[in-house]
Image (cartoon, rainbow, N blue to C red; front, side, top):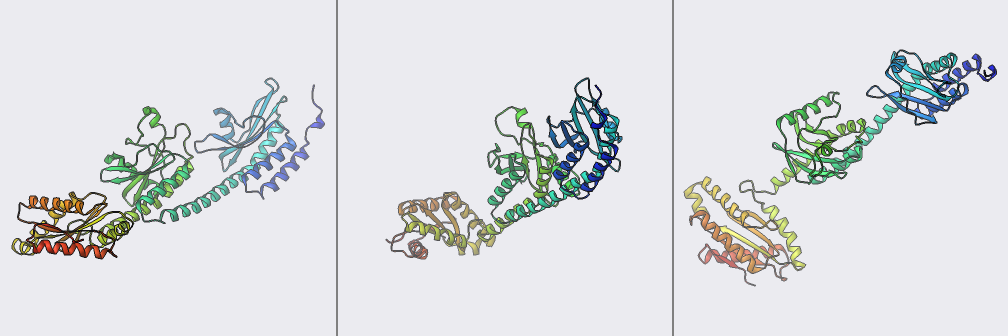
Amino acid sequence: MTPSLDVYPSVAERYSVLLDLARTLTSTLVSPALYNALYQHVMRVLPTRAFTVALVNRVGSLETAFHTGAGDGSLPLGEAELEHLRAGDFVLRGGAEDGRALLAAPLAREGRLIGCVAVQRDGRPFDAAEANFLLAVGQLAAVAVDNARLFAEVRRRGEEAERLEVVARDLSGSLELSDVVERAAARSFEIVNKPVVVWLLEGARIRAVARAGGAMIRLGEERLLPPASIARLKAEALARSGGAGDGTTQAEIPLDAEGGSADQRERGRVLVPLTLGARLVGLLAVGPWGDEPPDPDQIALLHRMAPHASAAIENARLHDEVRRLSLTDPLVQLPNRRQLDLFLEKEFAAAERGRPLCFVLYDLDRFKEYNDTQGHRAGDVALIRFAGVLRNETRAMNLAARYGGEEFATVLSGTDLAGGRAHAERVRQRCAETFGGEMTVSAGVAEYVPEMRTPVDLVVAADRALYRAKVGGRNRVCVADV
């Protein structure tokens, strides 16, 4: 049965809809509102079961941007149908025989296909008048849709810039390297929502220093980074700084977690280089992520974050180096007097709360005579060799330091007077063995007692014991009088 002609919109009605649509499109820059306006106007002429707007994505295929009505919004158009759209023509499919009709019209701007608008309905196929109407809708809407997409991109870029500013402030808010790399991992995970590991370059190897998002890498693990990989990472960073690069640098080195098959471990990983100029500082390893890769925009944002992370890491490293130099004796590479005082003050406070504490002061016997007869270079070597003896005989929880000149000291936490004396005797004997009797050392040992009020009292007690050792014949250990 042929439908009555009065159910079809007249040419005047279609023209009126197009005029209303044109006025609406000129005042709409927000994509959801724009798509909904398209839907409302098209429905006045083409009542349908489904309405879809699809846009061309990065790889050139159509991706649904808006859908309402039945179905999931997918438009499985063949290559021939896509060619029709690229040529500026509409696509008709189906009709009365299969019970479902589809009509699609291109959204094109300056000869470039940016997407399409499509309608579907059951039963009656679309006719030429309806196809021409949707084609006119597409021609009107194309500029507005493209402008709305550009507006959304500008707004997204603005939001990203604000986000990067927040991230940059966070990364530069600390000068502790461990804190900076932890922040870099956390901020990276917030961006991509995938496992992230921060690796720092140390010579020809990289070391895992921070992780986030459940990354299955042990902190402290090291991997060899071949020169070819370093060159590739540098090239990727250089390309991106010039506006090129796609952020898809794949791992050329074994960064995978232990366990699982090789296929499971290898599926999905992107390396984001951390560089300062032409120097590679490290890298951010994103993944593996299995079947759900991060959005390319997320990876691009991570690349834009990388220079901020690189600068923050380098600043923290320089701060560590400056602090190390300020607290380390440059000749013997032991903590200097300043670091000794800081450590002793902390341990003295702990001793006041009940923990045993010993302080040992050492003096190389007849060092000035040795230095004058053997030469200053030989004297420096002797200081360095004794520092090595002291370093080897001192546990990591304690502190060995250069007190000044040929005097050295050890702070022995949790050690009583007997333990302090035993430690000093070992150092004295090892010194004699190292120098073959050519150089000896005297030591004074003092233990904290409640009568002491400041760390200076402990040092003075050890110094008096050292004086008795020197007066008593040298090459011996004396303990402070209690």
